Image (cartoon, rainbow, N blue to C red):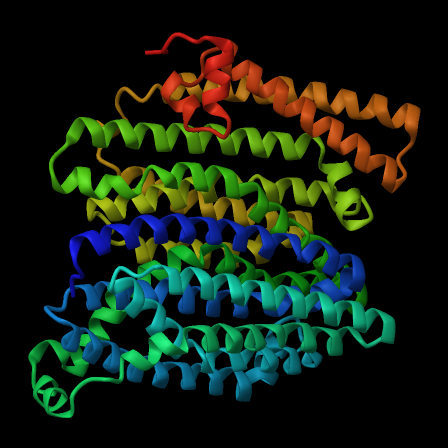
Length: 536
């Protein structure tokens, strides 16, 4: 289904920019709201919310990126509007059946799932609250996919933003209300999780007009299309599963690792001899790492991914030099930025932990967990590149192996080193997946990247920055104390100092080329002020 070229171009230019912006804002909001949530409800309240959050996260992936991308691809393949609408109808019917089954499984099976999540039956109503969102997923996914297949990206962008704003507002409102009314942590969890179906409802209202367009196919035409071989149920089921499965796994990778933690962390802490309440408190502390990782990955993944959309075009049109250039820039920028972000967060982690969450409890565990940002970022960038190359064989199986390994290692590591074992298991599981994705990239693309030099210089700069910022924070606390408000000011100074130190080191040591520096925020300004010669 192809619109007029001029209209298509305008829609893509406007829509792609807005979709990128809304995606970034949604990621930041999704991480930030959990900080006041934890402050309001405490470690155990945060534990309740985070135990069920992975179920919501999987639902979001299905409704926003997994199913819509598959639908948009199938819609865009159709020769005309009638064919596009009909295949969207069929996919909507298919997804409705799947969503009802998921809803029933979650709602009826909530007591069983709750017992599996550390033997906590009080989590059942929280699981049931989030289950309702799955009933709206077919409408949202189909309307978004149909719009994207017609090169109209704005409906997806705006519906995503509406959904995120409404959900965050509902969560914060009920967290404040629960704190004032002294609700139990489980009642609080139930109502904050209700923000998911409420937000989905408002997003559905916004995109409903686009959804109705799908069901305006002529009756006579519909009867003819039913007999077409490309619309047979078996083929549609196969394509939805085979093409959508990897998309969902990649988009939900970190959420699936969190789901493993929901089923294993508290249980292993209890096995190690802790009582239920202490174990729940520690799980709540451990869960602080998730918004930190999510925020930390935003810049590196966004800048690295910004270069990737053109890669498929360069590959198909055999523009090898341009492909290799953009491949090199995306890898080098993503890797350097995530190394810098990780070391920077580690340098100020005690102060960051206290400033955001009110205490320095679990700082070492969070430090290990933050290390997962490096493999996670590179996995997301490399898999997107592999998709542009059409080299995704066995990736689904390897991701599932990595998740299974995380589950096994949680049980093994936590018996010996407690909560730190869960963080370490996350890092190891991701490294296994990363190793396979690196192996899948053609060897000729790795040559000439200068990765050894970049890694050595990046690690050296990170070590210097980490050490100097750590010393600076110690001196600051010696003179001004470590109360929360003074720690916030010290944290701000430490972050600014670290950014300036690392940035000046990148320029002075010529870690990046001039063109790569230009791709960074304020990169053009940096190049102009420093009057750099292009680094070859």
